[in-house]
Length: 292
Image (cartoon, rainbow, N blue to C red; front, side, top):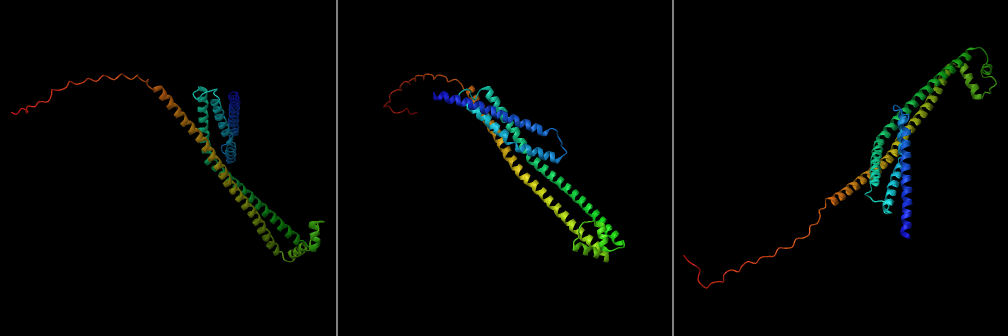
């Protein structure tokens, strides 16, 4: 009774493991194909996203392969099939080939992801430089407009407070702003010094922000290389080990089959031939030996 129950449980486990393994493998392969379409081979960000997504999902087919092999093992243990069945040998052979192909793919993805990450980081750095240059140009334009505006107000006749009220409207002014404007009226050359101070402060701020953004981009690239590179190495090692172990087991099975086929039939032992006794020689004589 217990043996029947155990066989039933093994049969259910075998069916569930084989079904789950097949579904996991097929779904992951379908996702890999959808990631490639539509291709954008000239974009480093596309390559980076492709390699990242494939490596992140690389554990799923590995679980599927393990579940499929475990299902076959349960099938054999339950006695419903044997190792020499054609369908079992076919599934194992295809599974080991798939593992070998996936192992090679993840081995190739190690330098592929590194190159894509570095290229994407370089592209991000170039974009940061363009944005920084654009910001510096805008700052320079605004400072020149402000300088011309101050000079235009100062060249007009009138009291400083009245000129400021006309320029700013109802916006309240602080004492520092009023004192600064009075200084501009008394000494127009101080406008240039003030503009230079503003320019240096704003340029330094833009450069600091640009440098920090570049450092984050470089650090993110190397972090991605370390993380996904190690993951791809481990996945490739697992897949190739499964493929080589399956290949070794296949060779062992072929050798045992060949030995069984080439075994010669045992011939029955032949009866030993009776030994013939030699006739006894003449008795010894007392005469001396013949002398010439």
